[in-house]
Image (cartoon, rainbow, N blue to C red; front, side, top):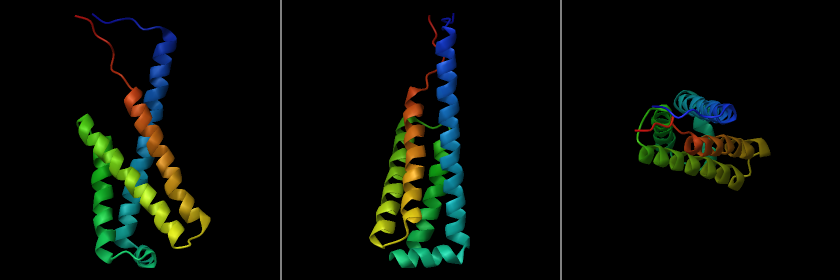
Length: 136
């Protein structure tokens, strides 16, 4: 037997679900794109050198972003999702710090913060989503 929810409650749940998926897909697509760029574009190799990172870190970060992106949209346990979100937070905050410390232009500094904001919205709506309530 299902509990009938008020129309406004259903609309709110729908809005939360749409917001969750929209922000999560944005983070996922950006992570996969940047991972691809890290592995294929010479400009990214130069950018990592400019920031003072060794070349293996660029490759390691690319694979980590692909794995994180997959786990972010995959139906995995809540514990794994929490670790994925934490990993992306560390990545975005570290990118902001690295670009700031190296004196990069403002747009290089702001982009990680923009994607951090999308990630935060994804995280908050991930926790607000709830399945349809069932009774015994």
